[in-house]
Image (cartoon, rainbow, N blue to C red; front, side, top):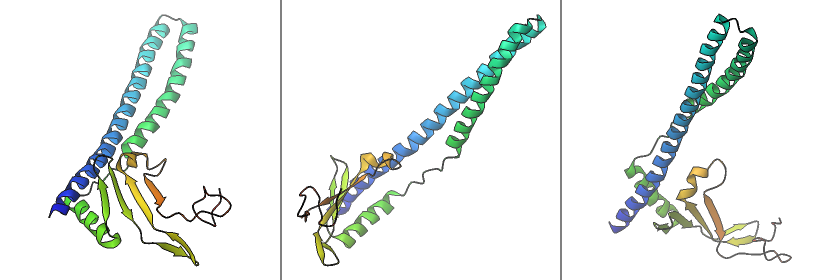
Length: 181
């Protein structure tokens, strides 16, 4: 029972990270909407000025304003595309707390002990020793940094650490004998 209480804390921590992703997505959409509204007001202001210049037969000024409206229209289209992209971004479907707790329990059943560091906001498992084609690589710790999930499109929130490295004979910085940098 104590273990599930700990899993619940970890699941809550993960849900908060996911809610943060949802919040960032909505904030980006709001930012794009503000930029679009600003560009719309630019065109509106220029339209009023163009009307006045035309009414007063200030054709040289009207041409300069027309040129500005042309640039603003291109900016408007650009900001419209950014807004459409932000609005149409796929919604983040959040799992239920109970589902995350069940997944954590399943991970422990599958891999053995699961380490949850609430302070460092990490969830880790240790694999069994891995061997490929007769080469023993040893066990690995796979660590998920919850605060790095928001960077998922740019870098991995996971770190894989060789617990019993098998360095190459020629370079002790290379973890495994067949890998070189």
